[in-house]
Every structure is written in structure tokens, then in C-alpha cells.
Image (cartoon, rainbow, N blue to C red):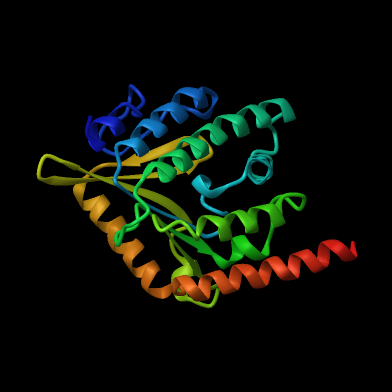
Length: 230
């Protein structure tokens, strides 16, 4: 199935054009369909200003984000959502492991806002999350950049993921973002071309891969010292 067909499977029954996915209370089916969409994509681009992008989150960091942004959720429901999101993350990581390591065109391209590195959403797991980012950056299939707070672009789009895949001889694009009521899919060519351009601009303004790793390592060192003193 194509990227567009996978995205259509995420559409709520009453949506047309730009549509939302099912509500978060049906998160299990939405997660499984996102896994299908990501499996159909040969390139994934993801940007997040406030958080580490979802596909890169370790479970307890994910739990901190879920609880911090949905304060009315019980711990039980929050943990259930964490486990479902972890399934998606693990499926993504498994695909990375199965891809050829010799590649000049990364499968996954991530831009992380510096704010996500310096303001932890889960104090207990922040160090683990930073180490995980450094580990993933060693994958040749992954390109990871940090967007400094000082850049003008850091004040624009908060987050989105852009999937793309070949369908015959045509490349298809699908944008996805999450809001409190669920997820939002963008499949119209004008919208996806806009998101592609925004991502290119963000990547241009972000630090290079080497410098990005230095920033993450510096924040990890600072956080490790702070944790030992507390």
C-alpha cells in the first residue's frame, strides 16, 4: 500500500481533505496505523521545538510528556498510552536496524529544538533520553540536528512529521501533527510542499550533525553533574 493509502486509514469517518485521526481514546488503533504509515515511508522527517520527537523518546520520557500535557489523565491511562507509543517507537527502531548501514541518504531526519534538551519533561529520565539521542545519532540511517533557541525559525512551527514514499514513479508526501483532540493529517500537495519547505528551512538554520552532537553531549554532562549533586 502507498503512503497516501496508509494515511487514509488514519482518517476519522467525518473528515475530508485535511483531516484529524481518531480521538486519543482510540489511541491503540491510531498507533497501529501510524506504524503502518511509517513502514510504508522510505523517508521520515520530524521536527519538535518543545519535546524530543516522539519516535526518539524513551518510555519514561514519553510518560513525562503525556502527563505534562494531559494533566487530567490518570496514571493508569497515561501508562497505557506510554506503552502504545513505545510500540510505535520500537517498530521504528527495528526498521532502522534492518536497513542497510551503508547509505548516503538517511531514512530518518530529525530536528530537535534546543529547548527540548535544556528543559526536561521527566527529570528521572532526562539523562537516559540524552544518551539515547547520542546513540541513535551513530546510526547512518539517521540525521539528527539541534535547532538553537536564538534562531528565528525556533519561534515558528511547534512540531510536525512528514512522511514520504514512492508510489510507482511518483513520490507522495503526508504530514502529521498531534493536538489535544487527536492527530491531524495533511495530504493536500500544497500543504505537504509547504511542510517540506519549512523543514528544509529549519534544517538550514539548525546546527550541523557534529555540532549538534556536541550540544547534546554538553547538556548531558551538565545534567549528569547536576544529578550527582542532588
